[in-house]
Length: 355
Image (cartoon, rainbow, N blue to C red):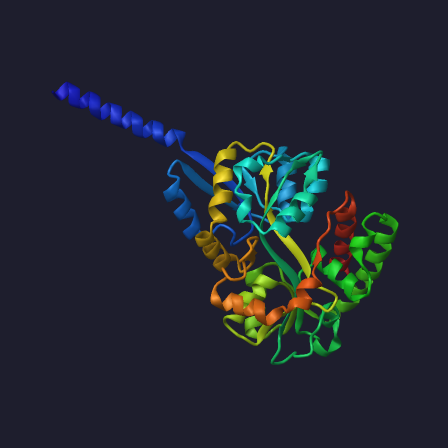
């Protein structure tokens, strides 16, 4: 009996060890707030053989990290829709999606078809949509009620009270504010450089007005809530979050059109947990999980009723910011041709270094 019990206990121990060893890790590279702990715990309860490991990143870092490893080290990434085509052509860092593994029926048809069109190479689709939103202007309307667009960031009337993030979005927004369409110039590097030179000079001149350059949503939120900054370039989701704390802080779609982005799901070429990746995609797109995700991100899920699934305060913020005309005037980021980001990087360095 004792011998049998020992064998039984030994077998159980081996089974537990084997179970631990066989647990699969889903290495997710995503944006801050796109993997709330509540949702991870819920996913791991439903799929106890999968452990989610999260690395927070941004578009530039996602490309750099996957380029450095040849697409290895991560199983699921979430680049924006315009950052996949050229990165894949240049660096071959993603693998085609098996759309039969994804319940695309729950996704907004226009966003799904738009992302598929943007990320199809040689007949293969490399991404599907997850969350979408816009970049534009945030203002405290109690002290800056007349703000309408990008040019207000450099208005001397708000000297020492404005902010922006020194990334490519401010280059594009400033160009639109100056009456140019940067997306229409993507295929003409010489014309694009001329546009960048004009934008660079304007943003260098603007430095005397700017209070500071923000680097993250928490950074910007603190500046706006404290009143140190009253007008800023922003992601709409940051403005939506602040609206719940101070309804005077609102998102303003620029009169030239808010810049619209779609964050996606894409599988890196060296990913080792495709099945887990597909499970995560389908899991987070369920309505009950969309509510959890949207409460964390403040962005709108790429589902037909995405706005309705936002928390009440964020839904109210969206409705306060956009009307039908604003939604029809969205400027979706276009696929970035090779070389454009290098040109933009040099422009941003010039702005940063200017005294």
